[in-house]
Amino acid sequence: MHTTITAALTALAMTTVVMGHLVVDPIGDIATGNRNLDIGSVSITDDGVDVFVSLTVDLLDGDWGKYMLFLDFDGDLSGSGDNDNPWARNVSGLSGTDTFVGTWLDGGGGVDMQEYVNGGWQSSSGSVWASLSINWAANSINWTFHGAVTGSIADGYNGFEIEVATTGGGSGDPAIDLLGDEGTQPGWGSGSHSSEQYYYQFSTVPAPGALALLGLVGLYGRRRRH
Amino acid sequence: MIGTLLALSMVTGPTLPESLRAAMHTVRPAPAFDAWAVPVAKDAPAHPRATVYRWWTDSCPWCTQSLPALEQVRKNAEPAGVRMIAVYHPKPPRMVDPAQVAAWAKAKGWHGPVVIDQDWSELEKLAGPLKGLSATSVTLVLDVQRRLQHAHAGPVLFPSEKPQDAGPNADFLAMQQALERFFTPDGQSRLDNSPAGPILEVDHNSGPREASREEPCIPPSQQL
Image (cartoon, rainbow over all chains, first blue to last red):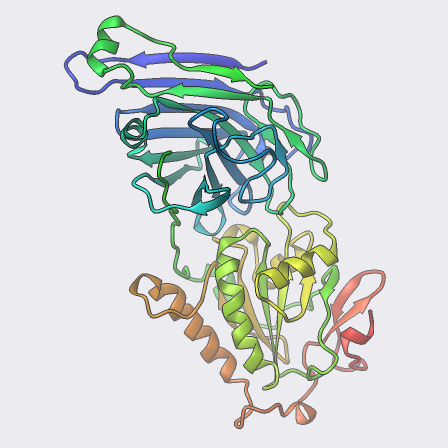
């Protein structure tokens, strides 16, 4: 079982509200023993402009390991089909994904951010971009999605659903660990299946001042699909 | 829908780690790869003056940029006496299907020989301790005596005139220059007059290995 911790930091004197949310995933719930792929926790916050996602695993490995974020902004109204991601990883249960974020650590690390448009995956030149930092001591990978809050709200979205997965370096590799209650995935040579995604609502929904005054917390929940 | 932008943390060729720097111009151990995915072409020169090993994976973005550039080099280098071999090393280390690896290489624009280093042991043998490397997608140039003559510590090299690609371009030019030292003056192979080079052989039990100069040099493609 995972545990969910929600925390909200509000400041009446400030124009933005920073909300935090942490999902804890058990260590040791993978079939392969690859500690760099064993999710420990994922936290998501925003400052009203940017979104910050932090993934902690059991033990990072600088030589290999791929980390994937699947984002869905509009439910199943649009987005990818099932088991359809730009890295050709064998992960089902994620139909409707609008944005895929693939990350690697070797060779200096990098982020490949793609969106599903007109029936296919493509890199976009939109206003939102991602940067990456790695905290080796804390075994954490940290993404900043610059302008994600403001850009998404401008597009009519108040948040997004997210799944986090770890995988290997080969096309067709499955997710070795998924964030949440899916249970242990079969491992290399098999498929994997996501049955649970989390919804994150931006801290600026409703307006920061109103949110702070209302003392709303826990706007972040989880959604089980299918 | 939210707009997105591809964000690559472009990395230029890092300074050689101390372990690799110390290995320069020293005789490296004979590699013994696990299997051929794509053998050396039957019409390839049997006695190369130098051999280039480039480690890569199918999902490595740096390899997507580097392999097509190295393929262009290979087209000139191979007839001029320099053998270039792409070394697939799965992440994580594990057994892989050579046919699948061959397909991945082709998809990346590489049409030369491909071997598999499934446990990365040959990378560590030739390049030194893995922990000293900032990337595993390294490129090594060994002469006929298996002395390490040039090394690129990865992860990316390709020709480009764009200012933002100055690092990969400089690394590519350095690699090209290093290889051209082994070319015959007229660009043609003088292999028949050269001492035997590090020819890879395949042992059906242990996989490809490098032949000693005393052993008969049978083109590896004929041994599979």
